[in-house]
Amino acid sequence: MQFVEPFLLWGALAVAIPMVIHFWHQKQGKPLPWAATQWLIEKQQQQSRGLRLDNIPLLIIRCLLLVLLAILLAQPILNWFSKPPAIQKVHLVQPNTAVLDNFKFELTAALKKDERVIWATDKIEPVTEPLSLPQQPTQFSSLGLQTAINRVDSKNTELHLYFVNSPVVADVPAITVPARFRLHTVIDSIRQPRPYLVVKNDRKLFVNRVGKLTSVPVLDPTLKFSSTSAYSGPIQTLLNYRNGHERQTVKAALEALTDIYSLDLKIDEKPVPNRTYTWVLTDQPPTKPSPQTLYIISGLEQPARVANVVFTNESLTPQTSERVSTGQLPEWLGTQLLGQYGLDVNNLPLSQQDLKTLFITSTKPTMEQHAGVQNALLLFLVILLIVERWLALTKNA
Image (cartoon, rainbow, N blue to C red; front, side, top):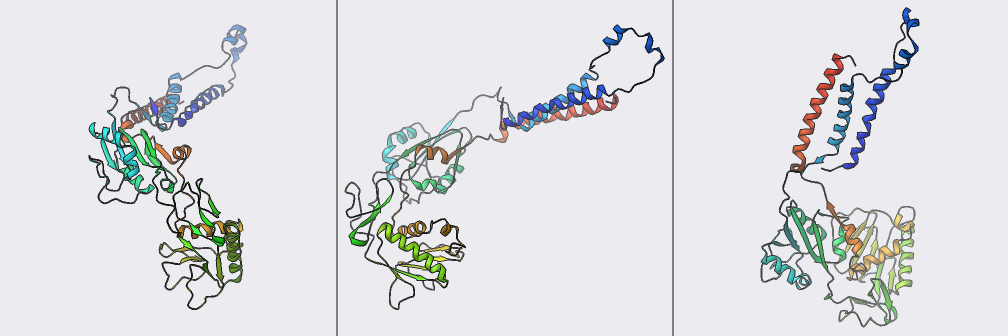
């Protein structure tokens, strides 16, 4: 017998409560004067000493009631007489060329065995031979993967997941999977060329092989880069704040970025007519935002999601922003700027420990698995309760 909540079985220790009450009740005798006490011999007095168990059936029933209640709360599952169900394999595949090329043999063998092979998309489309990507590919995401897993019947299913090991999968805190599942991951070595920026003194700013942002005179020859830089030359920056303290705080953060990564920031504290700005940091919403400009707007709630407009509902001062008080403002501003040009510092594959933490198995059984034994135990509990009340009233115990 298995239990859904086995730790609740510790409640069975409450069986000691009716025993203690029973023995305590036996000791609560009332002294009655009796004239013939002097004629009792010592032997008979010794035989009457100690605790006597009266109303033993009532004591046993009360103990059973507590034990049975603990078992009911632990939700038992009884599979003694049921045959083990047939396990069906389901293969959930990310629509990706690297996944198809790496697991071509496994997926082809699964199709020959008439096992379900489906794309990890919202539509749950079947994979057919010859293996090829869907005609209308959709963008892969962790939420889409979770939706596809939820649409697969997890009962009596062994789920096999095939996807590219990348930080895209870890966009959510956890992904719930059935108790029987296996991960098949691949690291996509055929990636798009890495973007880079040309900063001061013709230095190159890019994400290196270990996933760190670096600024060096020459690009790493072992990595594949775009033929041209994502941006080169001075970055025209506008600080348009009404609050002078906030302007000084953001300016200090930008100077820290310049010192660390050699960014060539040309900062204006007031708008210059006929000048096009690449980066605008302000506490006022833009009237006509340019798609080529990155806007960082503080002190306002985000009304609508726009790719190049970033809102933060706090003013960027040490008194009003935890990001500023903890010294994280330069890093956060740099992340926003690098994201504008496609430099993602979080592009490394997840470790095996990260994958184990990300995928959480759902071990709770369905209601059909334990509804029968639950109902039987509940009926037995009601019967015992009725018998206990009847014995207690008739024997005045």
